[in-house]
Amino acid sequence: MSRAPPQEDPSPTGVAVSPEVEAALASGGAVVALESTIICHGMPYPKNLQTAMEVEAIVRENGAVPATIAILDGVPHVGLNSEQLKNLAISGSQFQKTARRDIAQVVASGGNGATTVSATMFFAHKVGIPIFVTGGIGGVHRYGEKTMDISSDLTELGKTPVAVISAGVKSILDIARTLEYLETQGVTVAAYRTNEFPAFFTETSGCKVPCRVDSPEECAKIIYANQNMHLGSGILIAVPVPKQHAASGKVIESAIQQSLKEAEYSPNSLLSFLFLYVCACTCSWVNMYVYEQYNVNLIICTLFLSDKKIIGNAITPFILDRVKVLTGGSSLEANIALVKNNALTGAKIAVALSDLRKRVTNMTGPVRSAL
Image (cartoon, rainbow, N blue to C red; front, top):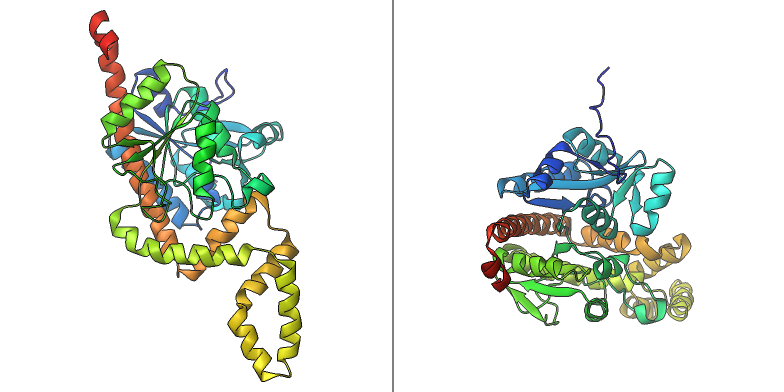
């Protein structure tokens, strides 16, 4: 019977840091934090394991050390070995989706947690990792002004000095309000090689950004300045989806809009549909009216949503799963492509930041003050 490899002992901070990550941090090397929710809740096995390994490989090939973060048996881990990654991928949704609010409960219970953006940022900062790569961040949900459904990713960005490299926020969210909320939180928002904030699957959202960056070195300078000034807030660097996937992005965006309609619950329209549906059994013109005015799939989905009480952080996975079905799986491939692209960009930024820090350390007083 094979034995699992020994796990790192938690440091005084209560976090187990892998030897590879610890050595890189100690030498001032480039390290990139990676979340684990995308592995456990973002895609099926074995695609999730393959993607996780490929993303880590991209980070390494571009000069940085990957640090996937998760909670294993109540112990937060920063940097996972291959066996731990495989266990994460196979276990999937058995690992609790863990945001900042859930950390204490998962640790206290000795549970397993797949870290979201907010929890990953928390642990990355705790051990000194300044850069974190993900697919997309959460945001203000549509009708958030009424429901107050706002992702903890945004408040985490407002109080944790970690730079998050993402493809923006998904268009299932209210992008304009998300950017307004980030401004209120004092978060620097920059777009990579574009003037417009990307919308995850598509390059554009119709929302301009206050800051444009065109190279890893520019990003590194902003991150360094943010740290040097002790601003205490994070940075969001939004990277558009690769152009070769932009065309499929438009198809995916259409599916997202349909899924959003499916997720809307309107008691009046539901009652009207049920009345007309009964009438349709005996009257052909009513039958035609039903199919012209209502999408039967939307109603079935609405019934499912209301019956299962899909709310809060369960809405996004539901909609993304529907989008995957509606697009024949192309949304999953686009998702993987943009995560890999973000990993490539994030690794280059991490290397540029490491180089900048080393140059500054070696500078004399006058030159250093002028930087």
